[in-house]
Length: 269
Image (cartoon, rainbow, N blue to C red; front, side, top):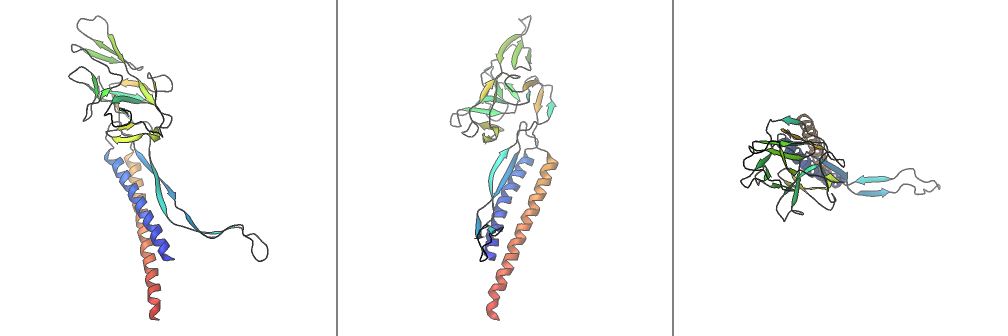
């Protein structure tokens, strides 16, 4: 019946509306440092079984195929994509990028996951207490904490995450801390909380912590930032495809409505 088409097309409109929302968010964050784009995954809904395949007909022959009518589509999940973004040189000594796998760890609010957030953003600052903090709206402190002397004249960060400072009283750079990175067996299972920040979840599994360049983790690159991994051209193409699919589902609703109108008018004849 045409009513089935109406409901199926309505599920398509709802699912495609979510895809358009996700694509719009990806494009809005095309210039957000460390942002990871998301992809919408779809799945079909249950089917009405009008005729089961393999049933025996009057001649004793098994039918080769059945008759099924689908009831639409739904969004199965949105998946964060963790391919590497471009590395942009900034020349700022507290900017860091991760080349390869891994996340920086920062101390966030205790009511989010385990109280530790994971991010690819590497725009760090030294706060009034001398601690390295993330340059976002909250200023979350790096984990494990690293303290920078107030009289430092230079900061050097190695590819292995070791942090050295030079002060007027030192002849050679002094090591003041070690940056550790985290990786997950299923990073797509991380919970997104905004601010280019992720927290551990049941789906992601616990983090594996190690120094950069070891145990499958990437290296840290000083004076660089990793840009968003959003490809604006690809996102615009996906947005146009979603818009056209939305229009097709709208046309399905119009066609089903016209069919019902014809059926409703049969009583006049």
